[in-house]
Image 1 (cartoon, rainbow, N blue to C red):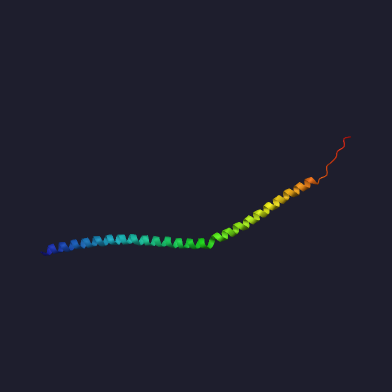
Image 2: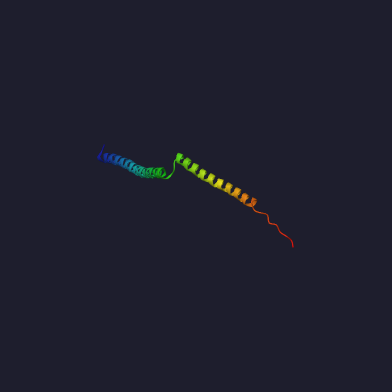
Length: 102
C-alpha cells in the first residue's frame, strides 16, 4: 500500500468514526432532555401527591362529616315538622267570631 492509499483508508475511518460519534452525541442530547423532562414530571407528581395527602379528606373522615351533616339536616326536618304542628294548634284554638247583622 502506498502512502496515499493509507491516508485514504485512515481518512475514511476517521469520517466513519466522526459520523458515528456525531450521531451518538445527538441521541445522547435528546435522551438527556427526556431525562430532565421525566424528572420534572416525577417531581411535579410527587408534589401533587403530597398536596392531595395534605388537603383532601380520607374516606373515613368523609363518612364522619356526612353523618354529622345528615344529623343536622334531620334536626332541621324535625323543627319544620314541629312548626307545622304549632301552626295547626294555633288555628285550632282561635275562637270563632260571631257577627251580628243589624
